[in-house]
Image 1 (tube, rainbow, N blue to C red):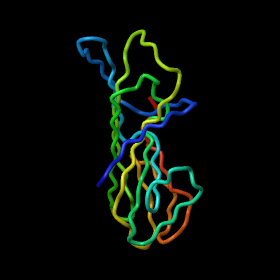
Image 2 (cartoon, rainbow, N blue to C red; image 1 turned 120 degrees about the horizontal axis):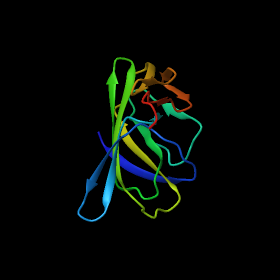
Image 3 (cartoon, rainbow, N blue to C red; image 1 turned 120 degrees about the vertical axis):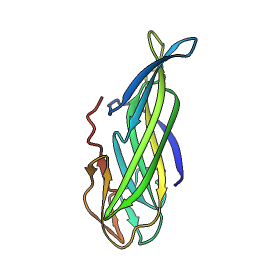
Image 4 (tube, rainbow, N blue to C red; image 1 turned 45 degrees about the vertical axis):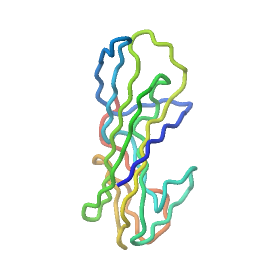
Length: 162
């Protein structure tokens, strides 16, 4: 499976489940935020579109891709950002797993007032013809048919927001 890290800058803020730890790097202290299958994932026929398109087309046995937004409003000070995801097929479910981490300074850091979106994209093998459901950390999409053209199936993690 291939993965790609995408970081988007947004105007609004929200939250998602995470683990945090603080480390002293010898200079300023930083807090490490670790995200595991948090937020929302969406599935696409073919590549993840560059803009928000209203529909996606699934063709039997053609590659699919997923985009997981693990954090929709990380601090403008976020750095050392890493994110990845994986697509697995389990029965009639497309299971997406995603992980990300980033660091933010602790204390009185002067940060740009903006939100940074932490997202990962990945590609997977094609789906056989039939009915499928997206599973993202226990959250499920509506069932969708392959072949078919539908609004991108999305599922929200069942993790509580942080």
